[in-house]
Image (cartoon, rainbow, N blue to C red):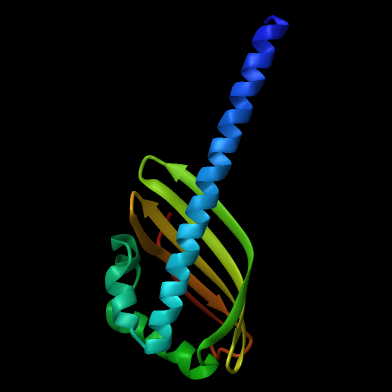
Length: 149
């Protein structure tokens, strides 16, 4: 490969990395907005709405009644989320859209927790694929509703 071809290939790779980073950044912003809507719904106790708007794979991993019961227990034991700080994120792109995982260290009214959200972003649609919360305050320590990704 000539020096000129290597420079062209290097520039092309740089452009691809920049475009991927911009795409991931937008996906993370979209997933964060969905997480904020999840929190608003939790504060209202709208757990059925969360479940019904989630991905079909999520709905197959638990039934609506059990999900609502789990989330009621979380709200009863921890209260509403007061603040959260994202500690990690991961984005994957595939033929079915993008999957974005966001992990937060969250402060609730009656304790702290680590929360993990997995969102599928396909076009303008963002749907919940998975939710996991772990807290020393919770009687069952962890609550998982995850799909097989």
